[in-house]
Image (cartoon, each protein chain N blue to C red):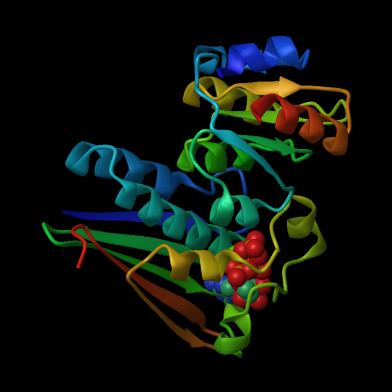
Length: 110
Length: 139
Ligand SMILES: Nc1ncnc2c1ncn2[C@@H]1O[C@H](COP(=O)(O)OP(=O)(O)OP(=O)(O)O)[C@@H](O)[C@H]1O
Ligand SMILES: [Mg+2]
């Protein structure tokens, strides 16, 4: 599955990093603790979080993640948007909670 | 090859500069190798620790055909109990740092797990030096 399929199926809003919408998705990782994601996420995963600053994109880039989903209507900071565009890692928005969107993503990737 | 970068403490908007530079350099040298990710993960965590816990710091990188040696030296409070600091979950990060999602107490273990050799030298009230060694070929 690609990021673009995810956007459509989970009704997400793409706000940046559009050049990465063909990134392949290998799975998901859910955490708001950055060094947990640094230690345990795997290449190609979609990261679900409520953190909205640019360090999120630094980690997503270092770990070669496929995309970042921000939950509960959270909006990315300006410098997070900018780095998402530079790295080509899409930032996707949803109004749903972490629980709900994670459940849907999990079901979709099964 | 030899590279040096300065780290400004307290400035989270610049954290990760040395690791992203090193990622570019390493990709040119060895391509999209698994080792590159390990090295940059270790360096990123070390950078974050200087920004979060120390006053100022410096990254010194030496690359040869066998290995990458990274030193991260800071002026700062030092670490009174290194064994305790190495335990996952132990953190003295400030409220502000925690709000950003740092301060899980996992950074030092991430460095250990993503390097072949890891040494900490620290003096309370003076500063901390990390030495991180990664071998380019599997031993
Ligand atoms: N350069 C440093 N100078 C002073 N103290 C440090 C330094 N690096 C680590 N420490 C101490 O060791 C503790 C553990 O560090 P570690 O990187 O494992 O976790 P953290 O930085 O608190 O949180 P995380 O890395 O998960 O965001 C820190 O909370 C701090 O007390
Ligand atoms: Mg840390």
